[in-house]
Amino acid sequence: MTTPEFVKHFAEALEIEDYSNLDTTTRFRTLEEWDSLAYLSVIAMIDEEYDCQIETADFKKLDTIGDIINHISSK
Image (cartoon, rainbow, N blue to C red; front, side, top):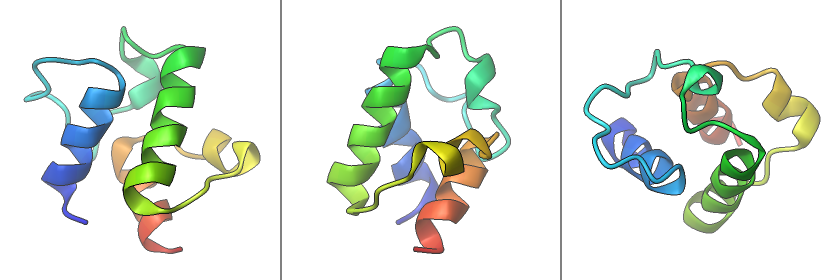
């Protein structure tokens, strides 16, 4: 998995057309598009694209897109 690839998938899950401002330091919970449906979309995307399941308790500890990438990479 590459960072640009993940950011693209992340943006698609949130239906963000211009994701040029997203990177590993982006605090995803502060994004205008972030809500409970976005959470479910991201969880589903991670499962489908990266064959990784993140428990709710673990996801709550993640703050940035980089945190998500690191969590997936550690699995």
